[in-house]
Structures are given as structure tokens and as C-alpha cells.
Image: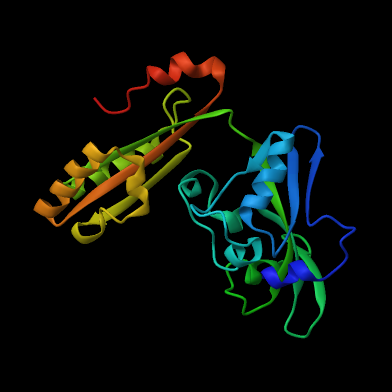
Length: 228
């Protein structure tokens, strides 16, 4: 997808944000654009896509041809559920614009279609107000049942005072705790404790959650107690 960066007309921006009132905001992004490029542009307007992947140096066309899953999927669905319109090059070499209402068969076939039904050259992606601040937590479990129960609780919260905006679970095996890129969240002391637990149990489970808020909500976020 990134080879498209070298062609076309430079006079037309390949990441363009549009705002139509307070309800509908979207970004038109070329299929070759990295998600980090999309984010940097939308943040200039105080906006951000609803759903992400954990790694942002992936192309828009690439992830939309798969699914695009991350910790926001339980709220907004994967990235392919947050697209209004596509420009697609079909197998016949035709450039076609499609959406849920215009040529829907092609639209839904291409989203998550692994490139078998067309190549995405542009996507119109839904936006929402970007959070001012984020509280990010990680909990380590040695018991899978407790881990799964708590994860299910987090994604079922519907109280505005407690609900999370991002929930994701992962497993850390004994042999890769020290090299796992997620481990950098922890201090050296805590990482040593986690490595010890993983060595003893063979694996540990990491429950990751994030809550978006603004400065006026700091006092409320500090008081949130989801688990007794």
C-alpha cells in the first residue's frame, strides 16, 4: 500500500478531515496512509477515529482489508465497522466508490475481504472527539477464571462513572515475559515479580483497561473502584 505514496497528484491531500455539524465528523484517508498519520491530522481538529489497532504504523487499506481489532472493539466494533465510504480498485481494474447505500455488496465484501474483492485506495472513517486525558491500568492474574470474569465485568459496565473505553486481555508466557513489548509498562521491580509468577505458573494473564476523561473529571476518575 505504501507504494501509492509515490504516485498521484500531490495537490490533493491524502488525509482530509471534514466536519458536518456536531454529529457527523469523518476523515478521508488514502489506503496507503499509516494510522499514525491519520491520528496526527485529526488531532489538529480535536478528533480521533473511534476504533484502532494497537500498532499505528500499519496502513489504512491494509487493516481495513482484514478487520482492525483492538481494545475499543467491544464498544465500537473493529475498524471495518466504522467506515462510511470506500474508493476501491476492482479485479476488472475499475475505480468504484461504494458505501452501505451505494454498491453495498462490494462495500461489505472489501471490508475484511483480505484484498480478494478489491484494493482500498480511500476510506471515509468515522471520528469522535479525542480524549484530553487517559487513565491506563494493567492487572496481572495467575488464575484464568478470575481474569476472564473481570474482563467480562469491564466490558459490561454501563455506568458513566465507571465504564471503560478500552479493554483488552493478553497472555504472557514464561519464556517471553522479559522480551514482551508490553512489559515496558512495568517497573523493573514489578517486572521481576511478574517473571517470577510466570515461571512458577507457566503463564500469567494481563488485563489492560483505559478510561478517557477531561481535566474536570480528574477527581471522579481517582475515586473509581470497579473491583472490591
